[in-house]
Length: 144
Ligand SMILES: [Fe+2]
Image (cartoon, rainbow, N blue to C red; front, top):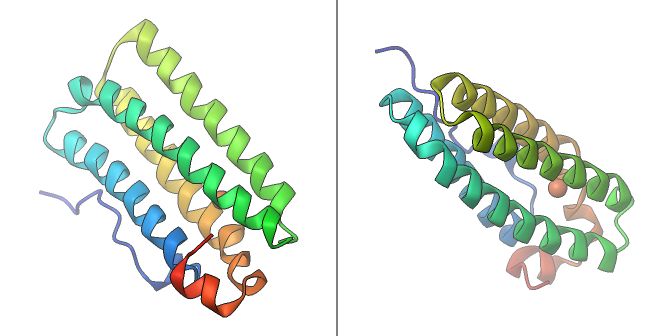
């Protein structure tokens, strides 16, 4: 068996904001569920449910993160919102493709690649800029 597709959370994904990191770890759990389904050859049947959960959870998480960036006037707030909007559109497009064509290993792999590339790049490029905008107590308790 080749190397696992699963993503392992490490310090390069640490935004310095506890609550955001907890939410990102859960997003990674969802992606890893997809990775596991692909590895066990169950992706075709699992993909629909994973896409539903992914859209539901990303929308909820993005909203929290956007509120926080706006409240603390983070300079990347607008860029973050824009990136989130585009990502949700991508997820919706996949759901539509799945609705029309059904689940296949091919679409599962494509979704997996898109998710991992986007999430890692987005966390490191945009979300990591949130921490310095927050007061210490908010950063540590995540009480936004
Ligand atoms: Fe973000």
